[in-house]
Image (cartoon, rainbow, N blue to C red; front, side, top):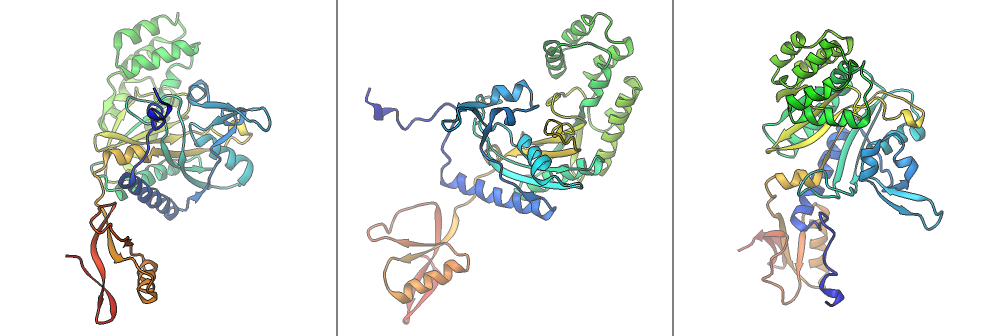
Length: 389
């Protein structure tokens, strides 16, 4: 088989982005960054690759497995291509900015995954995110939710739903148990699958490392999902441990201050268990999960600055894939020529924000990304814009 026959093929779950979709993504990128700026968030641009030990410091095995690794030909050290931007932003907050008060930071750039996190997803997301450092109160959690919702609403997503949980509930219930990483992973999987039989078997295998009240609470989590009344049920079903009480109070407060969107809870949802330190949320719309965030106070600890932190992130490519396609961008067609008056008229239109495409000789009937609904025509010695027939 000749080499050229496969040279155009890309790796699995890596794809080119073609003009209409690329324009949509870029418009959303600018829109989201402007929305974040309206909240006071400052843009940062971390590098795509770093020394591996810096990139993976404190992130755990999951991110390590998701990270592509290569050798730096200049230093001989191992580098990593970032699989998540949040640790890099935490490093910027801790070492480069080193502010004593609140820091609001946002970013937008590609990340690369060794494996897609779900079928048919890309391994090269375009990650947009915003993070607020330095405030431990729920006001920061709420601001992260509101900013994420405002971004999605600005993108034209309607009927949004916020689903919330708090990892401290499970942390508190399992506080007395000595758990290995494998056992904890199996417990998380049983909770996610709502598998009562498997969860009961795992808890019984802890050999007295968990109290009967905590065990009953863990089993009750399988039924504690739904809208706000589920929090009242949780207060009755779960033991009154300090961490549990605080988590439920925080969820109630966030739900009471949520914007005009539907709010639900799944207290058994442990996604990001090793990452989040408190409340976490996911935003759903268009039949898909569109954004994810929460509180992760420990993210900067490995950089010597354990500051409160909350935020969210989303994949612009995935978001665009569930939104209706944008119509072609309106444009003005102009004849190609070297006439000074014609070119001055074209320059003025472009300076005023119009898209003007010059039709090259012999290509008058071709179609491209732009909808030329107007044309630049010579009328009585003047170049004027008129509807295109």
